[in-house]
Length: 248
Image (tube, rainbow, N blue to C red; front, side, top):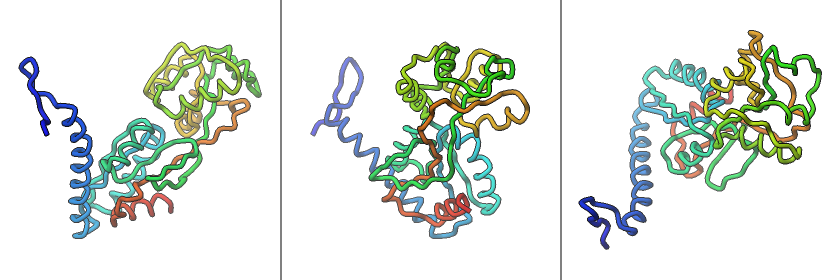
């Protein structure tokens, strides 16, 4: 079977080559995983744990958890990759990470074992000088008539925001969109608009008086932070140690 062909001085994959590449990538990932697993039989105090996380748990939970874990196991290395939730799910399916911490609405996956770690509540965030500060409650119409800052299209917050707007029958006055939580918070603090955001992500700014929050009106969509791993992935001693530590 021809896997390569020459075109205009370049060597390219044929259609069959692209098909084989799909499986070769998975085979390589599984071979790397099997090598890591066998190395783990020596000792839990050495080796590398690969963890992927979406933005909220990756920024506001995982640094403390990883520090605690490496304090317990001095010879361990924890490598962390922070990407949108769909990317982390795919990395788990591709066996390129050991454990994933993702913020998501309730879901089921035939290939992933997922346990709820905690709730990830969404709230409305606004600046201390915003007109919302004078209100005890915020109406759906008020949200729809106020400049709104959107999260990146791949974020779970964006998906919930759009679902809420559609269910409420409003069109958000979206003027800005960022793929960074910190950029969104800074824009809100400057009074450039309101946003829906994880309460966990703005806890520090709330305590310092830099941001104010309100309950999202008629918001019934749940979101949790899940700890996930592939169902077919052998649970190594280091994976078990990390998961047990997280849920203590």
